[in-house]
Structure formats: structure tokens, C-alpha cells
Length: 307
Image (tube, rainbow, N blue to C red):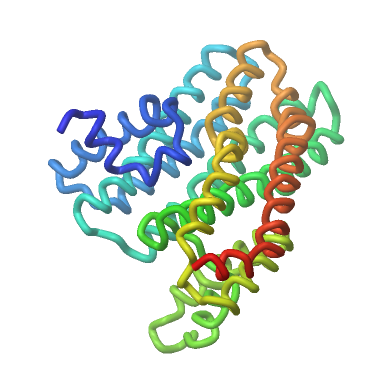
């Protein structure tokens, strides 16, 4: 296999990952994973390095000096490579752990918390205290729900297209049942703590998508997991045009605008972009997805009549 084919084999699907991601993120991440495997480095160590490096970028974004900002940009790109490499390394070596999954999920949140903190402290002397409100709204509200919705739509797309094999689609009810079965004092406290936060994350995703939840509920009541192939195909084809929009709502374009705002010396453009550009894209993506989910819910009986 060529290097490109090996990297493509680590990707969930070309439906949800762009060519930019393949060449700029996945390929360097794969090469790092090969190096770490040869050095017998555990994936958790790679995740921790990713967190430290990504968080450190926020310090360099605090300075109103292009040289320092360029160092921060390099650190954030480096951290993203490691964030990609840890999952690839875990699959290569079979070293998948709950703490690794928890840390991997926290990595991006820690990066952007530190980035926003550095930017806010930098902008406060010129823009005043209101910039804390602006950045808090952009980061804690807009950024959080944009990434959560994009992640959810990508996973539900993969679930319909490929089933459980390539999807990490999950539900609040399933995670809540797991949470209720565990105990704080029986050596299960760590997993219970993880589920405490993860079920809240899935609950937030479901709260944004009422028509999708209604469709999934009717689908489960009608057939369980025995979904007609024609429905899988039709859902994938309706969802596929939205996948580039979910990519916009995640990392690459967001960071591109962050870097541009620093290069032109106007970091306030970054939170404004999250609020004024990415929020309308989230709203549009959600509206289109909810509309065709409502259609599928109404048309569900027809799919079973065709079987």
C-alpha cells in the first residue's frame, strides 16, 4: 500500500473527511504515530503532549508580537497532529483505554479555553471589559454547540452509511443507563465521572435536534436496528451535502480564521467570526438536517412496504 492508502485506511470515511484533512492533518499525524509506535510510546502520553502543546499556544497568542504569534500557530498545528496521532496509534497498537478517550475528548476544549484566555487578556486593554463577555459567548456558547452539532451529524451520517463499525453515534439514554449502573465506591468512580460529563454532552446534542430524535425514536420502535438498505442509502445521500458544512464548523477553517486575525493584528475578528459567520452556518445546517429528518419520519412506513 502507498502512504496515501495507508492514511486513508485510518480515516472513518471520505464522506466526512476532506482532502485538506487527509494531507494536512491525517498524513502528518500518521507519520507521528509510526514514530511513536517505534519508540513504544503509549497513546495517552501523546494525548497529554497534545494538551500541553495546544494549551501553550494560548500563551503566545497573548502577545501583540507577530513572532510570538507565529510560535503559537506552530504549536497549535503541532498539537493537532498529535491529537490525530494518538487515535491512530491506539488503533495500531490496540492500546485503547477509557482515560485515553476522556483526555482525547478534553484536548480541544483545553486548547481553546487557553487560546480564548490569552486573546481576551490581550484585547482587554484596548477594548475594555466587554471583550470578556464577547469571548465567553463565542467560546462557551457558540463554539461549544457548533462543534457538538457537527460531531453529532458526522456520527449519525456514518451510522446510517456504515453502521456501528465506523460511527461513534451514542445516545443519552444509553449513557445514562450505564451511569446509573455504576457506583462511586466500587472501583468504578472514574468511569462514572466520565459518563457524568459525557451523558451531558450527548443530552446537549439531542436537545439541538428534536426532529432527528423523533425520527430515530420512530425508527427504533418500528424496526430496531434492522434498517432497510434503501433508507440507509437515502439518508446518506440527503446528509452528504451537509458534511462539508460540518467540517467548516469543526477545526480547520476556525483555526485558519484565528491565524488570519493574528496575522493582521485584529484578534477580535476571531470571536466575531464564531458568532457572526459560524453561528448562521450552524443554524442553516441544523435547519436543513431537521427538515429532511421530519420527511423521513413521515415516509418511514413506505420504506417497509417496499421490502
